[in-house]
Image (cartoon, rainbow, N blue to C red):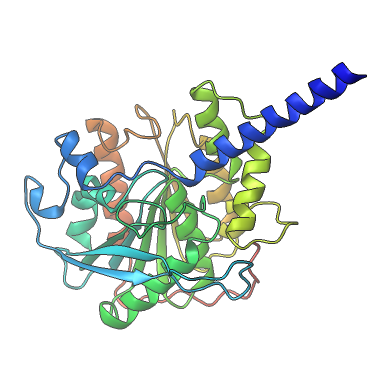
Length: 325
């Protein structure tokens, strides 16, 4: 009996350690900002591009949650870039990066956005880039900060321009939720490599790295939900269900060989949305769509055609469904 108790205690200690390590890894992604770009000889701001672009820096403060279980003593501030586009009559695009990325990720997409946009806005989500100290919430409630950015942009930059939300991976899901919650502000969404459930990319990354996930991933996600002001019964989100609430056009761009966010998820999200199209691109995976010449050109043409088709002054109809997470 004593041996069984010792083994049980050992298992509990091992399981607790795995959960805590997993939680820390999920909530503290690498901050890919200036130093990261310099170490890899990559452009770190729009003026460093082969065709330099001027830009302005600002920041937004994440609104406090109304039902938070934790007191907010240091509000999260998120840096914002505002980059002029080439079409004064075009929409304003707001770009949201993926997990472990930063606002710099917009640089490789500027030649797809700038020709048809009046302004491109890119920001560091909480826990990323140069955002104030804090943790990533895995797309659980970052839509609140994006909603604040949408309001700021609508009042200062886009009173006469439609707003298009553009997001990659985690940022795609955040954009979908923000668009569903702000139907009178958002005219269209471009979701690149979206996924349906929070555990999908996390599990795939852990499998790829050979890290255990069966006993530790779901508890770590549950704790992340609690820390992101969700109640203990929260079961996660489904981006397809959120896409079904959209009152605006949706373009899904998905690499066929995406090993982190399955193509099936992109198809399900596009199928669920009332007005959506999906562009499936061969020859690329999750992270290199904009590095491979052929796939890059195909993605660029899809973005140019989709945004170019938006009519100036277009406003999305109001949606009546209640939030689902």
